[in-house]
Length: 584
Image (cartoon, rainbow, N blue to C red; front, side, top):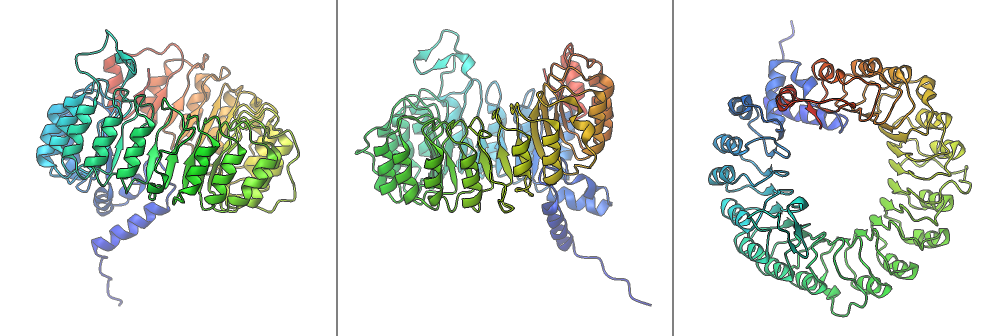
């Protein structure tokens, strides 16, 4: 009789389960659920594999349950409290007492910084590496001091996007502003002196910091490698120049919509930008001379974002791209001067391009589309919304392009079914497709795409497609997880077909679909067991009473209710207790 084999060591099981999780759909809403139900042993393993915990509700029971929850997941590294409703201080105190070795914490989108809780956490967890305090509605220098004193080993800090409704603006503080003043240069100075290990900082929207803050950061934070300065109105070219000179490890800078232009740049020390891998200059007024200077700097550039930039021409971008033929990410949105013949020339330099954004480049057409898919062999994401696609004829003899994963062709009114049929045969591995606002598309064209592109997991269309589209679904769409079909003309029968053919659906946006009733919504919720989010905004024939039924009859996590729905704070918290956020 054969001997009974010994159980595998726990370490082996953990490696096996980790591999299984890697093989799952990355958009799977709860990858641990199925594995944890196999046995108590698997439950124990998956508990130890969980590294991220998100807490959003604020019911009183959470405080008593939290210690048990933290003990259940002993290897938590990341806790996300963004949009947490209620007093966060007791929650942070419980986390401090848990003994967890956290690496990152998100306390964003709050009225004020939870100072007491952060002090408590800092006394137990000095080695925290990443802290997100963005979108704090009342945030000032004293808060920066508290953060620096509590977490001296921070490497990543996000203090961007303070709330504008408190009156902060580049021209002063309104009478409605709170007592706490916004972040200033003095606060950044104090922070920079205490956080010597800082590597990444996000300062977007802090309108009162000036070039002095950049000098302080470049002088005191010698390991700084990434900085985001979007909408910082008092930052100037001189400050950025100083930063680039002194921060030799800086490899990413984003400075969208600042208040100056790059015309003639002799004072910019491009030769010192040797570490820069990515530049985001969205919304700037640049010039060809500026692009020439960047080209002459011979950077290790991989990502260039010039979305909405003005005052430059094809000549400037040609010089730059001819120098950086290893660039992988290129955003030229709203480069209105670009034509098909220009893109034909630029494509000669785009051997390594993986992502390209030509949204609202209105002069490029099907010819550019064809050039890119045949010349750029590793291109997997292409954005061409609001262009001239559909005005010409796409080549029909293209070889299959197995690399393309995501296409945004929204707002191209000339795209028709013939175009859809042509490209559907070219991209067998397409996963994401946006056809919003494509007036010439009918249900037959959509069906042809879905039939030939079996890997589609996200589809965006709109109400201009007729309601009987779904009734033509004679095949399963097992990988479709996101369907955005706003202002559609579909009815209950068509929605029922979606439920039957799309069993993996997780997010469904039907906002403005006036032909639906509660019965149709119930049908799709029952059939789509993985459904986590549904949007019924302005679905005027759907009863508001269906909200309670959806919360208790499914595993929905987020509901945008139909018109007429009103709930009390206690009802909202009760729904949160069941794990579902019902939006206002």
